[in-house]
Amino acid sequence: MLPAKFAVMRKVADERTWRVYLGTEALALGRGGITVVAAAAGVSETTVAAGVAEIESGRVGDLPPGRSRRAGGGRKKAGDAQPGLREALRGVAEAATRGDPVAEITWCSLSLREVGRQLAGRGFRCGKDAVARMLREDGYSLQGMAKVLEGRQHPDRDAQFRHINAVIAEFAAAGEPAISVDAKKKELIGPFGRPGRSWRPAGDPVAVRDHDFPDEELGKIAPYGIYDIAANRGFVAVGTSRDTGAFAVNAIRLWWQREGSSRYPGARRLLLICDAGGSNGWRCRLWKHELALLAGQARLRITVLHFPPGTSKWNKIEHRLFCHITRTWRARPLMTAEDAVAGIAATVTVQGLKCTAVLDDADYPGGIKISDQQMKDLEDRIIERGSFHGEWNYAFAPVPRPAPAPGPGRDPGPAGPDPALLQALATLAGIPAPGDLHAAAALAWHADREHRLTLSRGRQRRRAPRKTAYLKLSDEAVLVAAACRIRLGMTWALLGRLLGTDPSTICVPGNAAIPVLAGHGITAPPAGPRIRTTADLREHAAAAGIVITIPAPPQTPTRPKLIKDKSKARVSLHDDAGHGVSGGSQHTSIRCPSGSRHLNAAYAGSCPPALTRHRPIAW
Image (tube, rainbow, N blue to C red; front, top):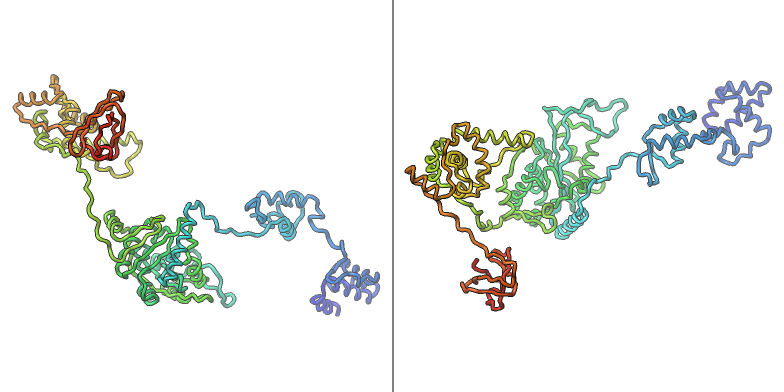
């Protein structure tokens, strides 16, 4: 009978009531009752004896409500019973403490049992519950990681945020569409696990693969989202190809055709808020090229504002659309692309968010390059850069502007050497024709140059060589000049004069070609001529019966010589009308025609008004 009674009473009695009840049963049994009751209730005889003593002493009603023991009763806490335990616990926790040392909350990376084992190694007995209690008393708590650090911030980060908010408010007040766009993380198609839990019959979880290795046949999906900020509506194009700039713009195009044009029938502008990288990054040329096409097709002036680098989490689509789509997909494998589309379309919130999803199974090839000429045409005719960070803030005009008038072309530079002159020099030096000489020695010449450059840099060339052509000198001209240097003893100054280039320009490749020509039998004769001037060249050519035409020297402008002693300086200048002006003792500075140089000259005081107004001077 006693075990049955005790089993019922133990469920409803607290520690104090249970102790007193056991004492009453032991007193009722008389001698040996404590042992019998303790065995029937499954408790210690000390507990039963404490109940008997409490009844006999008349202290049953002495305890205040809510207490089971008198003050000071029970086992002491581990921190009080073992001196030095708290200091040892702080030492163990300090070695694994994380967080800001000046913050009020810190946390320890060791588990409670691991802390208890380390304390046992130092001679203390402490359970995990006591360790947890003492850590909380010392200010520790269980903490996860918070992704709040943005790394290096751009100095105009906040200014760009304010600019974006101001433009959004302007479009909202005008009733024009403003959308936040971004590409969501790619998702695997097939029986792959997803985070989260869902209500299912007990013991019947959804079976998925134990590894998330992509399935080549099923592939992936690339959701691209458009969030209408004012209407609180989402639109997602689920692509089965690549996430490129063309795919991103086509998603915007589908949104405008299916929802945007009907929601904003009188719109003439469209605002896009997007991240700084990815398929819609501000460096992506394909993104700009496709947006220019969309602006012309939809007859909209499309304004694009990019968030600064590293701040994509502040894009509204991240925490107003994508997070709810992830919630809809939780604990649910996406077996097909249609399942993903259906899950997105079923995404709703109590704040009124509704979503539309479409499947975009078109093929978007990668590696499409937009040339420099195409980008220049976009910049000249369609793209309008903002005054504040034009690389982040720009717009596309629906109608291209007229092409700008072509500016002055680049100076073509000096014309190349006369072929007849090269042929005459080759004949005079007794070498093959320039074309034959090039065919025989050019390959070895270039190979020798690459070998020397490789040795000097200590590694192979990483990029393709650029076409320099030695300031418009052909390979034939360089090889003929080097042969003339060998056979005729011509100076580099004379060769530069004949070929229309600077001597320092021709001597560098010419000296490198001399050893190569020596390997082809072009060496200096034992008693060869030494031609230094054009007169020597004419005389030698006449003796050989060769007609050679020496080009006239280029006309270079001469500058007045500056005289340090300004008291004796005199200069002769001319104004626009050709009137001569002479100066004497007074120093002045007169602007040259180019507008970038000044001439220090003596000025006599009788200067015409034309010069005092810095009009161009015939130089």
